[in-house]
Length: 394
Ligand SMILES: [Zn+2]
Image (cartoon, rainbow, N blue to C red; front, side, top):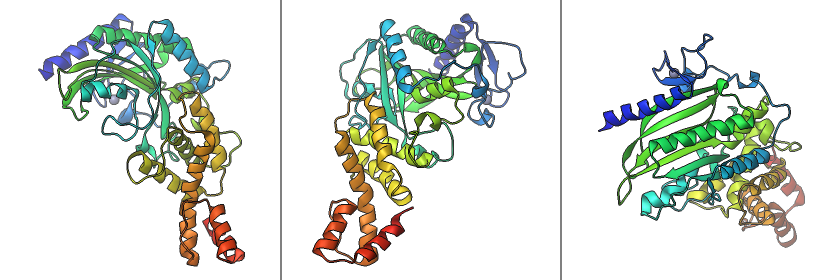
């Protein structure tokens, strides 16, 4: 069954792309099929994806818009575009994922978790969602590698029970969308893959197209029949892009973080990235905890406390609160978000100081509150506290 499905998928993708005047090539390095718009130039022997990538994507050299755009402007343009093409706009889900094995939402397609895992009724509309997501596996590389963040917006179209043709029509809609934003199709490479996945409901085969713009991966389109815990497998079309990556590709700034970092905040890329993700988690109601989303929050705060205590952490968190609230309805106020981040960052500092000076253990309190208690109730030396605090500053 698998072999025929693979070749069927591949043929359908070939027909679709060739009809739209893309040429098919085979990568000399990895043997993957990829498509480009022109036959000329000597760059056609490598797909340029993952292991076949050149060191630095050259998308910055491609033709540029006359004015840079903001993430919010592009988000609005995209939702207007898809609404005008008859798609239903769906509000994003809370970042905490209650439905499946991931603690936090990592992709827009998780809107189908209920259908796949719990046999919930299906909404058959073609849908568009701009879903804030986290990718905690990037924590260690954020400061080292450009174009990566631990949180981003997955802009997606999702359709349940489509035919393969309907899926490919949605791919076509994305081509129109990207052209409308000012990207030329001649600057894209589309890499085709068929891959087996398992979302804990059994293995399934997926037809995947990856979209590279001047070497920078912007998103992908998948078509698959997903096995369900009960009931028949359900076909889905899942096409998702990184919103911030699209905006980077449009603006062509030197760094991805030129787009994301607050202008006036002192701090590294890692610090800003962690504040951004912490702000998203906290405004979705996440508090420090010992498992799941709460543990992720705690881990990020630990790094902020150990490496960036006394940097412009709270200015950054507040800045990102504004960023996210354009995209997802906060369920926690800005004040409470700042308080929860401060309590967690300060908690670690308080513990360190209490151990250093053999002081009464801290409660759930900020460093200011802890010091007030130590000085006025316990008569601890102000000088000792200041010196200990200095050791926690970076
Ligand atoms: Zn390759």
